[in-house]
Image 1 (tube, rainbow, N blue to C red):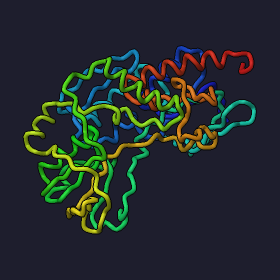
Image 2 (image 1 turned 180 degrees about the vertical axis):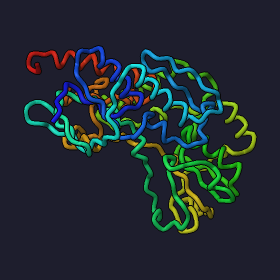
Image 3 (image 1 turned 180 degrees about the horizontal axis):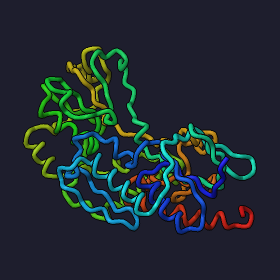
Image 4 (image 1 turned 30 degrees about the horizontal axis):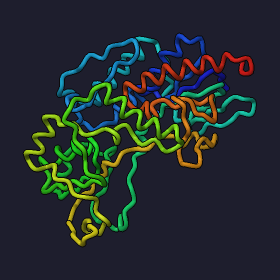
Length: 350
């Protein structure tokens, strides 16, 4: 069974950033990734997501991301960049390797189990993101609906909604982007959100970004589930959004109260017949493999200090909570490696 100083789980932005800093740290490491190819979650994005509508891709450390043409699919451009990064810095990603569980090995080390064998490690950097954990809230009558229900993670483009009556659920940027795409071909579209959406007139400055990250950071420090950076970010009045407003597409309704076989019903008794419910309701962190370590606290979250799990300093979560953004993931990888170098150099762990 291979032994190493650090196992990194996940080779998206956060995992690759961590690997870059580990290369010069003096620590041995293994980088495991469940996908068969480079690109992290980006390789699974819907084909109609173009670089023009991506909020922004920040450079991985040491390698500039040359902005592709605006009409290039994000699912092509970003994975190509990640693949070039792996080649440039000779980062050995073992894939596809699906980590199934992480346990205490009984000697202060960790046992990382996977479908391709196991590793013994002194520390773990978890960078598994959220894409594999789409979240769909429960509403009464959900299992009686005779139409189709799908999540953003399974959206492949607007063509399949041609002539359909579609309800789009969610107040984030992806919900609005998909609403606008589908409206071009659907018979009708209805946008519903739990809270009134907030649009931002001003630019997305670095100060505003720090405010958003601080909100999520406060949650994880308090041991609450982190929420997402996207859920804490206001919607931008892009040219696409302004055009959608002019077309009347951004007329938002409150959430329906229940789902019926032929559609949805609101609390006041109003109903609407629909063929498709598209849940743009976000994701949850993919952390099931860490369950044997019992990291969650009584408030439902993992208490964090930066990237470090407070109850187990061997474990760092990058791309989680406040670092769940491309720029945040870069910083988190650097911070995690810096702390682990200090931890693993301590006499008690040498």
